[in-house]
Length: 442
Image 1: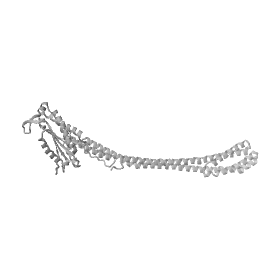
Image 2 (image 1 turned 30 degrees about the horizontal axis):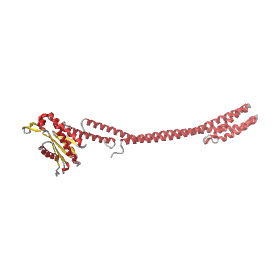
Image 3 (image 1 turned 90 degrees about the horizontal axis):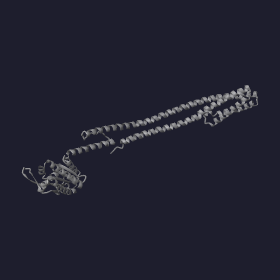
Image 4 (image 1 turned 135 degrees about the vertical axis):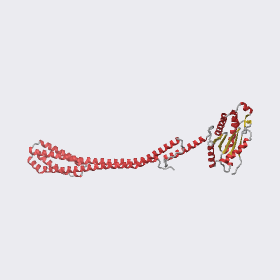
């Protein structure tokens, strides 16, 4: 069973962790920035505005104090216009103070200023009547002390306001630094958590690629049993298993290639025996066709090695054709050697395939002879005892063994059974096949 934590999954999880912590850091940074902007707005709209208003009130009072002293001394009615204008300006500033969201420290200021403004208006009436003596008395005993006290209070308020501003700015700076540190910490935690997974994946990929490169070089050098040191059930583990399977398949193909007959390129004895043993092991019923050419030695002696090889190759191609037409994908055509061949096919195909082989072979035999030998119907040659005599034209014998008729089939038993049937077929004229239908118990 493949592990759920494949390389793809590990990489995806690593990215998800980074994304999650990045979003956390971004969210915290945005919340901190929003809070920072709110506090900055409050600071600008409250403390800074209060500082400005307190400054404007103080400057206005100082200007009134100067104009009032000049009026008392110079008794110039034109100065009264300037004094009244300053009083109007102070009323406007006072209206702004009342409407602005100022700190608690400034809340008592409007009442004190209004009291002063009431007395200042009374003083303006004396100035307007040119009652300079009464105006001088009221200025010295009432408006001037009130104004002086207001200016002193304003100085205290400005000091307190400045201290409040400094404290707020310090807290704002600390909050900014804290937000920066926490954002950085969250980001670093995400990176630190994903670093081991990333390192593991990188090391795994590097080792796996190195192992696969080494195995590739070994296979290229002709070693089809490489030791691939890749473990686990991730993609590289599966690739290593597939690679090992491919190497085994290449080894089998090489063995088949080495075992194949060099003339017909058909599988040889090793491949035939392995296929037989495999079918026997899985108890798959099959038909075994043993194919042998009759009088081939005489043919080869008469026509020579080259034409003998052509005849062998012609039979190999013929068998391929018949199996391609009547057989299945699981059928095997093998060449034991010389003029002996084997076909492994399904039970029901065995006899019909033997008939087709004989029919096709007999139709092509004339191509292997000269007109004179074909007309004579024989060739002259020497038998195994050294006696010169005539030999019939080439024929083919096929011994068909059915696995279902063998109680305990084996390669040796099938070989012995074929040898018995071959001996019988050799005594017959023309091309023949024989199906052993006897039920044999071993």
